[in-house]
Structures are given as structure tokens and as C-alpha cells.
Length: 432
Figure (cartoon, rainbow, N blue to C red):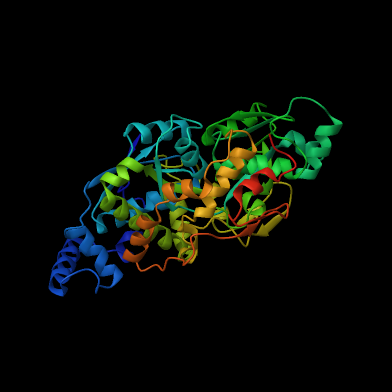
């Protein structure tokens, strides 16, 4: 489904961005300024962005097709187009609404899509030949952190299950086939689900039946009793509560605070052929994320925009609260989450840290998706295009971090810093 993102769904552009005419004048002026200064090195980052769009570093491809799945975290890709930030950077984004992550994968690989809002782990899986034909992939930036969840069925709630410990005890006391859904075998939701289950002593591959379900179909499948639980992005966890078919057992930020989630992805071949286009699109999407996170008013306007049928196709009230960090687990607990979905987070949410990519590889190895240990760091350096990210960040005045790695401690107290990925992958008690 091709989406006309410039349908005037709300008035935000009128006060925050230049008109089409003034934008063309602005680009023309900055291009002339670049020539007058004799190069890009002396320019302010915002001026440099205009020069890239107008001068010798202009995008090689002016119109790009970007695929997305109807999830809250497609917001920065959608808003880059709605707000006209794509044209500011010299490209036009044509949005393509996709039905499944497998469809996104196939269209990226065969060239029907130039870029996509896509699962971090999917990109690494395809690059390694797992979950699709082996293809060299490229991650240009992280689109967001946090904001996914694990939903359990209302039937489990009626049986007294509140969270992971209760679930493990209930499964032991009431043996049967328990079915849980994720959205793609190597994707983020699969890894969060497996990690969460294993942290409570449930082996996902031996103690449960795991199925793959596209995000928009999760609630419907739970409604008809096809699963006991699922891990998916918003708004489908909130929607399950609103429709009284499930409750939130854990948020993914409870598993890993400020974890990486979706990315702006492409194939390595496309990026190598179109580096200026890749930089321009990355800058536009990053700038959109910064705009979204800038105020609660912007978050609300974003929720109203992406709720439309052309995008997520649900009510705005199913989206907005969790974007604002206002959580209700569907069992009476309410809280203001300190780590809600972030699209910019002062720049931290967009960094494609090498250690983030390596973590997904460790989990792929842990669960038998990879037969041997890869060269973790070499793979991450190849996929995570920090060169493009840094150029785009500079173009919009965002300081890139000094280190390409970061450290965290996950919900089970196990520390991850990327220093010894093979030992980390092999060190879990529950694994394949």
C-alpha cells in the first residue's frame, strides 16, 4: 500500500517548518553560501545539510520508497514525510505500508523497497543467512528505544497469573501446550520473548510452542484463543487491554532499559550505490525523531497522525498514552514509565552501536539460529553504517558518541558490554 504522507492530517507544519516555496528558496541560498565559503568544512551543520541537498553531494536518487509496518515506532519515518523534512534534505519519501516483516525482508532484498522501518534482529539474521536468503544488509540508524511489551491472555489472568514467575509456576502446575507468538524468528520481539521466558526458567524452545504472527494480527489471534501470550510493539499491547483479551506482563524496557528496537534499514548494495541518498534519508528521519521527542504536544500530534488508516489504523487513544509513558497493565496497576519509547532521546536513541547489533547475534547463537560463533565485531562493523549515521547526525547538529559500544545489565542481572560475545552467548544456563 503506497501512502500519500502529505495528506494534511494536522496543522503542525504551518508553524514549525517552511512552506514549499520558502524551502526551495532556503535550499538555493544555502547552496550559494557553500560555494562562497569554498567548501563544506566551514559550514554550520544545518547549512551543510542544505548544501548536500543542492550541491555536488546531492542525493543520487531523489525519490525513495520506505516500507513500514503499522506500529507506533514507525512514527519518525512517517513524520519525516508528513513534516516535509525529507524534501529539506533533498529527497522525497514514498511510504509503503507492509503486511508482515517477511514482506519487508523480501521487498528490501529484491529492491522493491529502498529503505524500511525494520526489526534490528531481522537485519542481522538476513545478513547471516538466517530467516531469509543471505544478503549483505545495512543499518543506518536506530529508530527508537523501548516501548514494546509482553502480553498474556485474559484466561491466564483469570488463573492468577500476573507476571513471569506466576506464569512459570502455572505452566508447571498445569501441563499442556502453551503457545506464544513473536513477529519474526530472528527479530527483536522473538529475542525479548525468549529472554523473558528463560529468565523465569521457561525454555522457549522446549517448554512452549512458538509461532510467528504479524503485529496487526496479534490481538485477533489472542481473541480466538490461538495463543497464551505474545511479544509485539505498540499499540497492539495497549489494544489487547482495550479489547479485554490480554494484559501487559512486562514491558521490554523492563528486560533491557533503553534497548535498541527498530532501525532504518537497507541493503548494503543500495547504500554503496547511493551514499548521499542514505545520508539524506537518515538525516530527515533523525530530525523527525528529534521533533517528536521535543514536547508532549508533538508526541500527541504524532499519535493523532499515525493513528490514521494509512498508517497504524487504530484509535489515537490506543497510541498516545504509552508514547507519553502513561502505562496501565490491564490489571489495575498504573505508572509513569521512566523509559518509554524514545525516538531521539537527546540523540542516544538513534546511535547504531556495534554492541547492540552484536547482542542480537549472541541471542541467535544462544537459541540455535546460528550453528557457530560468527566474528561478532566484524559482522557488526559491516552492517552498522556508523559512517552514514555520523554524517547525518552532523548534518542536523547532533553530536555522535565517542564510543561505538555501550554497556548494560539486563533483567536477570547479566551484564552485556560486547567485550566477549562468545562467552556471553555460551554463558546462559538455558540455551539450545
